[in-house]
Length: 154
View 1 (cartoon, one colour):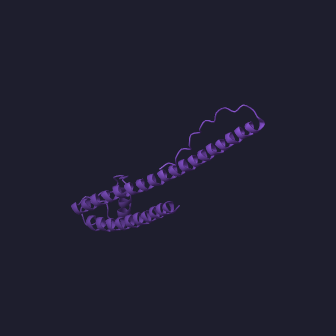
View 2 (cartoon, rainbow, N blue to C red):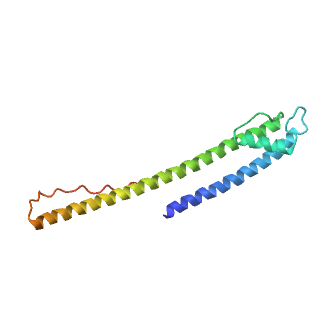
View 3 (cartoon, rainbow, N blue to C red):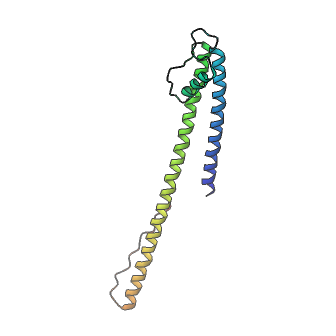
C-alpha cells in the first residue's frame, strides 16, 4: 500500500515539476524569440501572441509553420525548445506508461488472490466431502494430494 501511494505521489510531483518547467521554458523561449525576431527584416514573429503561439506549436511538436524564426538566435532558441518539447513528451509518455503498468499489476494481483481463494475453498470442500463419505461408510478412493495454490506474482 505504501509503495502504491509513494508511486502516485512521485508521479504527481513529477507532473508538477514538468508543468512548471515547461511553463518557464516556454515563457523564456517566447521572450527570447520575440527579442531576436522582432527587429529582423522578414520576421513573422513580431508580437507577444505570435511568440506564444510559436512556442506552443513548437514545444508540442505540432509545428504548423505559420510562424518560424528567421534569425540565427531565433533558430537556436527553436532548437532548445524542440529538445524541451521532446523531453516533455517523453516524461508524459513515461508517466502514463508507469500508471498503466501499475493498474494492470493491481488487476492481476486481485485476480490471483481471487483464484487462490477459490482453489482453497474447493480444496476444503473436497476434504469435507471425503470426510462425509468416510462417516457414511461409502467407498473413498485413496486421497490424492491437491496441488498447492500458485505463489503470488512478483
